[in-house]
Image (cartoon, rainbow, N blue to C red; front, top):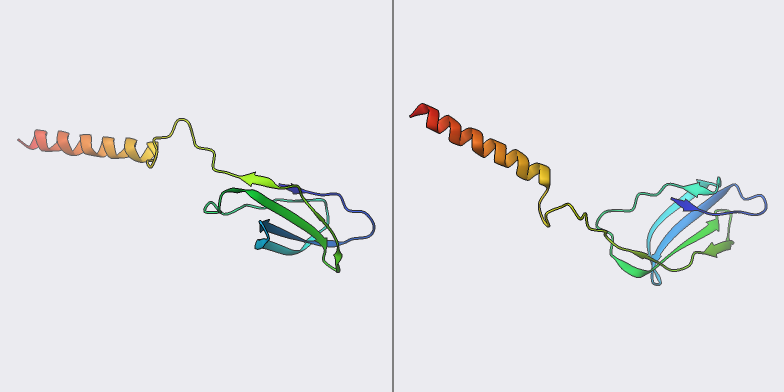
Length: 106
């Protein structure tokens, strides 16, 4: 969730996401209610030099930058790296059923 506080009579804002000095993502003409729910892609580059620029859609000179922040993947402590636990469970059950079926046919 991105939040900001506008002053004056701003009705719409543009929101830009920068990695260093490079514009990576943007959303134009967002109604200025002070919040925007933005789902960032899962494959986004991790790093500590991200910033957000919020500017008046009608006057880009009226703007403000966020402080730098970090985007990082937080690993699930219960996950097996590279595998989904549900997938492993289903595969185990399927394998067991195949083995039981073969034994019953003998």
